[in-house]
Length: 145
Image 1 (cartoon, rainbow, N blue to C red):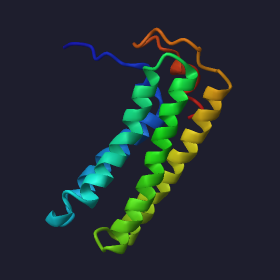
Image 2 (image 1 turned 120 degrees about the horizontal axis):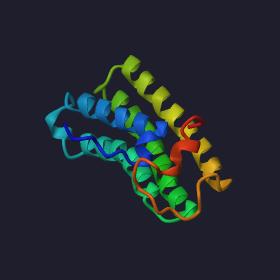
Image 3 (image 1 turned 180 degrees about the vertical axis):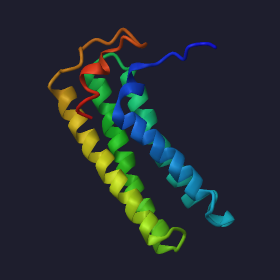
Image 4 (image 1 turned 135 degrees about the vertical axis):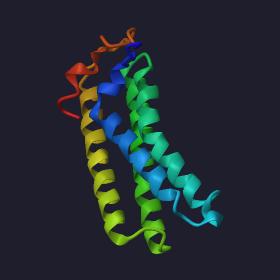
């Protein structure tokens, strides 16, 4: 069996939780009405996808500043999701308990992103990123975010 290559961003809890949220929202939106497929379903799925993918893309950037800019985009997508989930609740596409759980997770991820941004601003990740595999320097950050 071939060993899976692990990129440094995959060790970040914010990326992992973003992936879990994306997967959950994909499943939930599959129950929405067909006429929302190109509307609310598409918007929720794209915003949910943007949280972990922007973190991954940012990890591949060459400086903390560029990385932070992508993480800010991830935070914006999390905020967008908060509004979209509220809309889905208002339209009756999800139950209030489900919406509450989702919103709590989004708030938690947003807080984690804010903490991660502070770490990036403090330059606790090397300024020039050259490694993209297992040895990547996200290790210092994983315990705090």
